[in-house]
Length: 133
Image 1: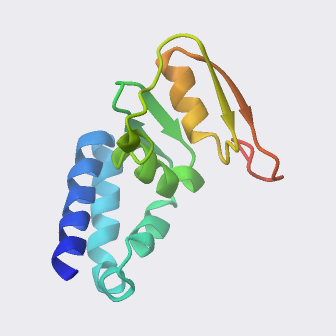
Image 2 (image 1 turned 135 degrees about the vertical axis):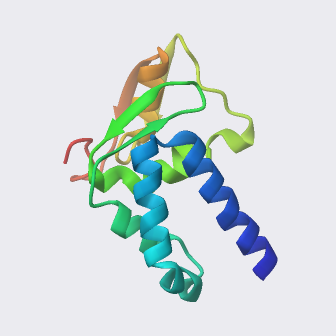
């Protein structure tokens, strides 16, 4: 279990370095180092993400699109753009056509689809989860 968690954390470090801009990656790595004991104790990268989320960030998606985000979207962006959580199931990001993102949450997937070239309709029922809130 511990070895699997360590491999997962190492994978996150590699993916952040690969997909985040150099300044974004450096900021997250610094946050991780400062909060490493807290991350180890909680068995989560959330403490580093919370510290990281105080500055805006930029990411390069697997399709090559560059996404510039306000600070509050940083932890979700690590999951989506670095870990590729939606692409693990075999989903591919279309470069044309229409993407309907139901339950869009903060809109990270919709933004990615739009930057890749698709036309996007994003729907979120919860107030306060609109991109830019």
